[in-house]
Image (cartoon, rainbow, N blue to C red; front, top):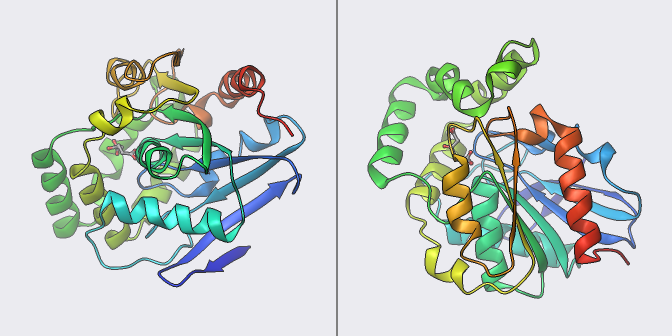
Length: 263
Ligand SMILES: O=C(O)CCC(=O)CC(=O)O
């Protein structure tokens, strides 16, 4: 286990693979921790430096009181990558992780040389929707929304598997401050204008059964960046790296090859 004791936050991360390899950084979604990528990582090509981290208030990273701003979440990963002396990474962000990736690519182009916006968009939901979710969680606990969330996170096929319970447990045990803090950050984010200005290789990934960020929403953001690529994973929901890691890895490997992301 690795903890970076940065001045503003203690961040839990993993740094695996080839220490001299081309860096790939994974940022997970709301209510999940870096185990989100467990099935995918062994399928990645050799020779990469693979960095995963738990964002603020998630997994083993310190939780500070809610609300958080997107700027704070971007600064957290910026500080971590500077601490690890990472530059020119392929940044793979899923959902809120994809928002963090968009913001980081705009703020620090030296850190991000290519971006995967997975199951994410420049803007997700409305402030009203997020405020209702925050209020529900504050009143009844994050566990109270775990059942209904699984229907947005996973396609029908996966919901019939015994693994579903583990992901429901992960969400139910999620820290209230971390969860509602990140909900507030999403509520306050509209990256349409900054993302339109991005000029780097971008790949969008969507799941046909994603109830949180449906394919059309993801596509709309991907189309903002000239030359970007879009892939859809059939039968998968919001977390396709869990539901279909082989297909997710194939798509990533193709993008790695196309962008020449090797040292
Ligand atoms: O997953 C995220 O990072 C935010 C999108 C969302 O609302 C996920 C969910 O449906 O719970």
